[in-house]
Amino acid sequence: MTTPMPARPIAGKRPATGALIGLALGDALGFPTEFNDVPSILAKTGPWRQMALPRPALVTDDTQMTLALARGMRTAAERGPVGPLRLARPVREEFVDWYHSPENNRAPGRTCMVACRLLDHPGRDWRDASQTGSKGCGANMRVVPVGLVPGWTEEERAGAAQLQSALTHGHPTALAASDLTARAVHLLARGTEVTGLVGRLRSYALENRTRYHERWLGDLWQRTASDASPESFIARGWDECLAALDRLAAALRTPSPETDPCLATGEGWIAEEALATALHCFLLFPDEPLLALRRAACTAGDSDSIACLAGAFAGAHLGADVWPRDWEGRIEYRDELLSFGTLWDA
Image 1 (cartoon, rainbow, N blue to C red):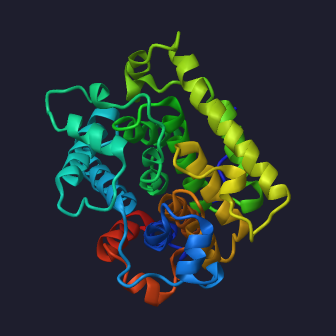
Image 2: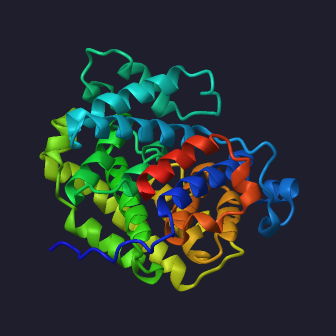
Image 3: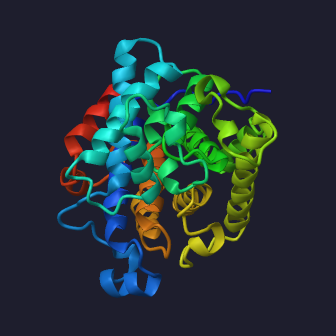
């Protein structure tokens, strides 16, 4: 059974702009704290509830790859209805351009770099570049645009989310977590109540547990040696995501804002934990977006990726006007982020 869609976004909220700016702000806030434990972060920044946006407000590969995906999606849309071939080609080209860019100097993930080097051979099937053993958070740190673009069917949104992951991270958990992350953004942008969000995501995971998007992924599942069928391949990923959602639900039953969220939902280096811990930070402070960002940035795990997703969730939920003008005005890549937000909010 398909879960009924919630109401459309509130007029004037501009959820796409809010999500993209929130993503970049979280990324910039978490950039200096990544690879640090919480005591080291507090020694550097002072109390986490007062953490200031760095000057300059530089972002990481998380925002850079989000924009690369957004450009590829825009190019695909200009060529006609979205589909696997029409989407894969420009997104692949944008990922390779990012790989070669002199601005790709922000500690990019190893899986993304290895896969993009392999994708930089036009005659190679992208499935031969996909790192099927990796479920790193690089799969879903960049997927937010898939949740924001208007007009796609559920099948197109799920297929696109998994395809963009599979270009670099082909592990079934990376695919499922990317799909689930895009779904969370989409639901929030359309006005889903935060109190029911985790339940909706769990229902979505159960409904799709054995659904393999062959039209989008082809024979990717056969590139692993451990799965007897496409259904068993993808079910492995959804099962790990369901376990992460269960840990999230347990943590939210006894919320502890002063405790590092990573202790309950994971450090975020892998895709399902990045989703769960980012949601954890957002749902601790659903109406206080700066506290959600600051809590996410003050974590012992992959702080920039956790904070960028928490910012995307908060911005999709609350809209563009929640972010301080001073913060928004100095974020790196601001003009391009705003242009995509305007395009998709229209």
